[in-house]
Amino acid sequence: AQSVTQLDSQVPVFEEAPVELRCNYSSSVSVYLFWYVQYPNQGLQLLLKYLSGSTLVESINGFEAEFNKSQTSFHLRKPSVHISDTAEYFCAVRNMNRDDKIIFGKGTRLHILP
Amino acid sequence: ETGVTQSPTHLIKTRGQQVTLRCSSQSGHNTVSWYQQALGQGPQFIFQYYREEENGRGNFPPRFSGLQFPNYSSELNVNALELDDSALYLCASSLDPTGELFFGEGSRLTVL
Image 1 (cartoon, each protein chain N blue to C red):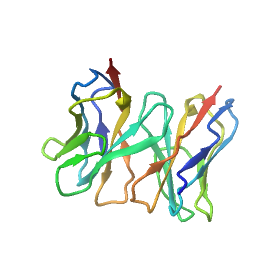
Image 2 (tube, chains in turn orange, yellow; image 1 turned 90 degrees about the vertical axis):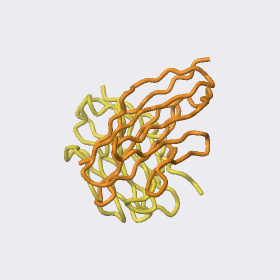
Image 3 (cartoon, rainbow over the protein chains, first blue to last red; image 1 turned 135 degrees about the vertical axis):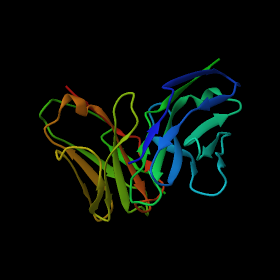
């Protein structure tokens, strides 16, 4: 079975500073990888996903994540954060070759400091 | 195109009671997945329904049950509520069982 580890439960960062939210996964087969964002009092929204092809994927609001197979990681980065990025971010994984469901990490709360 | 809607948004129950949560899937979606998100945790997969049949189940006891209707809306039922059942219950619909998940805003259940 696959699993996801988000190493940081909370990450404080100053506005306009860069940020990296870490995610590692384990699986015995190839996987699809996802980052979801949950704004306060809202449901989860898909931020970006890696299915195949280029290992660097980007979202429309400036986030990017890189799939690193050798390190089994899918860290999320943004070069300059805004106050509107305050949210909880969930990394998720699904096995590629089986009918397994999406498994989520415990989440990382991003605090943007003024 | 309407998104995924869930009801009720908040509810309070006492131990031993039963609860039914409802979810209307996004137009054109035939698959509904339910997740439990306890405070400070990530969503945990409960089960998935595809074309009115259960299509996968997570590590939850049988007192968690569900239904999917011909219009692909869905219900989550929890019997004999326990304090640890207090959580945000999220419904997500998708075009098919492996498709992108579109989440509702959740139903927050408090068990006293």
